[in-house]
Image (cartoon, rainbow, N blue to C red; front, side, top):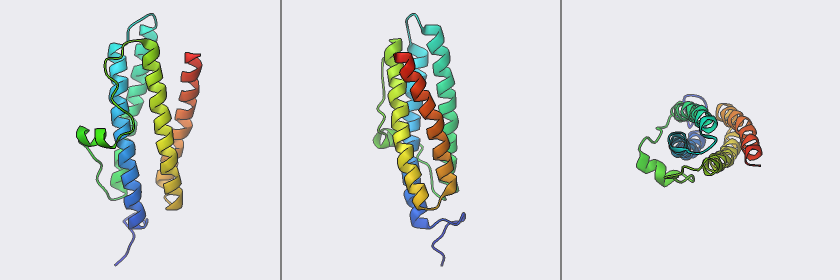
Length: 157
């Protein structure tokens, strides 16, 4: 009996990666809903600019939710899909009743910083497991989100 999965990774490594990916998925889902809430509820002078930008962010986050879940399936495991599980697994906390534009932007900044931290952990695990697919996905996300963090920081001054 082989100890590798259908894509040639050791099953123990694939299981560990799927667990970390499920943690990442939970964070993406909570963050997605936070940004959706910022989009709906932001008020103030920058409403139009921020409303549009938050839509851009949450649209991208939703795409990544699907990509992360599909990577878990590719590894031969099941993505978590209940919000009660997301709340338990996520480092990002629900951000409720935020209306101030600057506070919303700080929430987005903090969320992306958390995702980058998690993705670096995932990148390390993937590298150790010789999992180029997960490593490439995490690396692409990190590169893109580091630029977003820089821009959000510049926006906040």
